[in-house]
Length: 328
Image 1 (cartoon, rainbow, N blue to C red):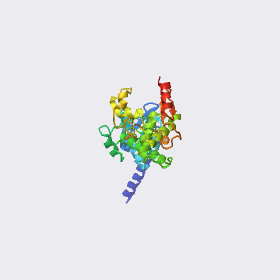
Image 2: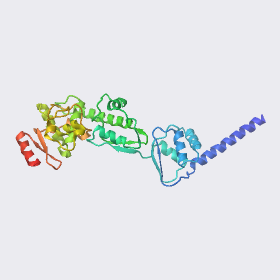
Image 3: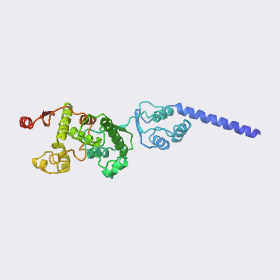
Image 4: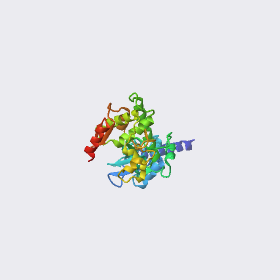
């Protein structure tokens, strides 16, 4: 009986020593290799992998003790991916708190209005901090993987700044941009002007993409939308150059010729009536709003003035005079 009591006392004493040692470890500033010190936690990294990484780069002396501390505090699954910068040497407890609260910076990529889907893919593929899961996937395969009902990807990703941690999959960014576009498109479709010659949110997206590519100055955007809406109502050809350029693909070398306008493609609005079969670019929110809330105008034509703005005309005669004025 005495032996058991001594053994229990020894265990209590040993547990006290361990608790004291862990407390001392928890509140003692880490000896960092240098200050300031930066490190990254990749997307999907486990606590063990993160602790091992921190030991390898000289932040921790022991990954095992750090993992033990996290387990005691119930934070084994709360490590956040991100880029962390240490201005001063933290204690292990402060470091754990920082990483579980995600108090680090993240990478970002800006998706720009007017980009094509292929341009968006190129930008994601060129980013070394992104995991390129879509590199060998076709366009329909990407759409299927992100849960989209569409197979044509053009125009369906909302231009915005997207933040992500190292090792984030490009599929995740595609999905966030797609859902973002669906949200803005549906919200604006529900609040659209009445009696527009558009039968679906997707048609609104197509028109918005054309408006995006035709707009040189923001103040003209709603008027450009008004012109296209008027032409659709009257059954007139849209006759917009950006759609022709899109349909030419790699054949376009920076300048349109008369023959290009006369050569029929699925996207040539000089030869085919109505909207194009898909969007031609990623439209921003302002272009979507313009498509669904166009200016009230009688204008049917517009021509670029050469300074980014446009001249609008209600008749072909006025339009021809504007062409002679600005193009010559």
